[in-house]
Length: 283
Image 1 (cartoon, rainbow, N blue to C red):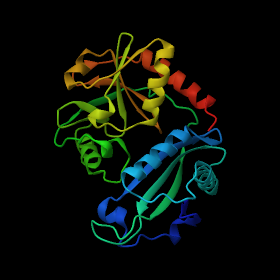
Image 2: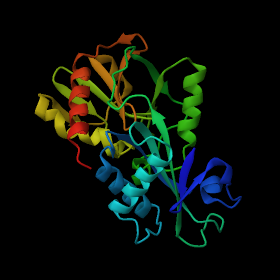
Image 3: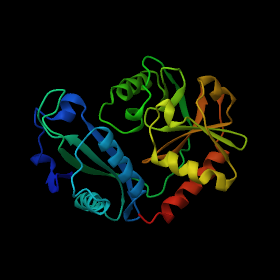
Image 4: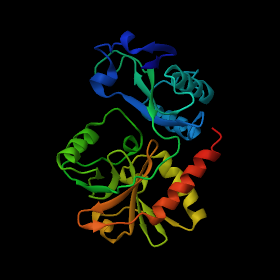
């Protein structure tokens, strides 16, 4: 696999991690995971501004070269270096503070790493088999700005994923300290009840998801009333449909939560509109 580290293209055999790497030692990093298809990065502008927001929140020094055009070109360069220019790819840009210091860094300058791996489909596909989900309650996700961005401090997601695997689940829903549902392990959460589309607000601690943002913007145009409102797990029992969203998989519908089952009728229509948004995206 080819990758880009600080502007230069390398291959696996040339890369090593310094023992003082702050991402390794302290989870001192932010990242974006993006989908490349049809020769472009899907919703690049939204991803770019979320990355910049994350770096500012983390008090990282943003290089003068980090323009949208510069980084987009680097992402595409990595895609091409891996022979994926005419295919679909999962692209990740990881930004960490430079080596040095303990909890207190020696400086706020950054390193960045870009990787690209193949995806099977250029368009989002709805999963044929609905997901089986449940709650993860051993630890709660904190609320606040750090919870809204993608950082390398992912312990909660890791232990929740182990729990999911041990219990034969497809996904787990996370709770905040107020025992409100905020998101899934790797996705934002949506509920449908009639013509109402419900999702947790950012104040619950959920990720500021790009696909979440797109769906909230176009949902009223397809006859859905949008509500961003905190809710308890009991709300899931009253929903007609439940689905999860992220930038790589698009939309995945949930078939079962405990003894409750759901359909995917309106979810499928939302996915169709999302694919249209991708096709129309000029970034």
